[in-house]
Image (tube, rainbow over all chains, first blue to last red):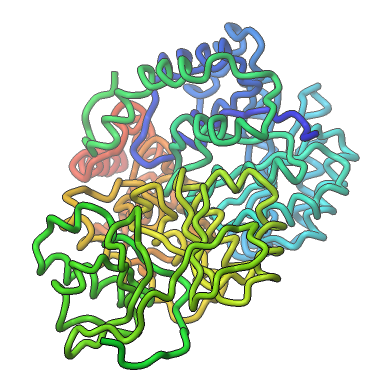
Length: 280
Length: 318
């Protein structure tokens, strides 16, 4: 029997990173309400370090939500963790550069720095009573042994889950299975965050679930940077014969229509490439 | 008239785009352009028999499968073609084969038609059993949801399958050719030329009368747009940090978009492109204004950015 899968909708964070796309605060709140009512478990609601408008929206979400857990995305920086705490979310999600490529060339640091800084960041968030999840950026190009070290550290410090991010969307289903199985010994529930660069974001996520992942990141209609992310509706539809959602999604078809109505104006404006036109 | 029998040595990807109905009504020159562009990618190309006549004169015999049945639903066997006379040199060698068949048919190439829903089963074990039994090479033809068909087809080839069929741009509920080309290229498959994909995509747009969607994997014209501060900063330090392959690999260019997500790296890069030194103004202030503008408008246009730069320069002077 396959374990139940929990959905995290990241339309308002990774989805909105589609260049030129901008969801006004009212749209974000409407989307949160729709996902909440349908039974989506978590909402990756934005990056508080981006500024006050994001924090304000997240605080309103926290005040209005029924069951959905609101997660604040944070870089592995103490200042970002403080910004995330300003938004008073349910969860602080810390995204950690995990491949040597990102660590040495982008962060221009080493693995020891990553381990130390991650410990400080988790420590700060936990000290203030926040639930913490940890995302391993570029996990598909990382050394599995190092991923397991990060996972062990996160577990020891009280993180509640690890998310494997296929940051550049290169995983094939067999690789997703192998990565999941390799990480199964980490002792924390596993999540997967896929990108659609090779047109396989949905099947890669399904395969990861079949191998033991219990949390899946999705976006409405698969929107996101480059070729987008794992589409919520395709994931639910294609995976229906083999997946059990927890909590179950109430009326996915109605949700799709509702979300389409909510997001359409902003998506249309981005698709039309109308820079400079005022948003609703 | 049969001339000779050759052992088969096929590229592992077979494009079936021209088997789709729109090609039947397209102009011969457009079909020829698409056919030649597909060959340039390094794949096998399958054609209905009537198009083989249309293309006579530019056919590459070793790289072309002629569907004797003539349609996507009923491809029948296949035949190679002599380019000088359009006479077949090999016929009726492709036969349908079931994945779980105990005895694969006697044919030079089996055609393994599967529903993409197979992905939701223990497909790897079934492929493995099939490949152990198969005496002849088999071409997987997966139909159904394109993402599942692509995933199945890539997995089959990575398991050692001989060939798989795909279609630009995943049309007809087929595996997506461009996604498979890139997936296999990233796995070191020799003989594929992703640089030829944009020409093929443009030819497909002409033949089909449809456009490649803006965010279509591999070929979408806007997939190399980037605005996120973290990602622009990363890409400026290491071009491979936040992209699976370079835009140039598929004939595209990266475009740094200014919007609510932009960071100082993106703003500085845009200033540099305009020949403006970042130290002539307050970069944090300008970045904040770009973000504010992006929150209100989405993408910040070149004109709007120029106005923000002027304001920032005036603030410094004041």
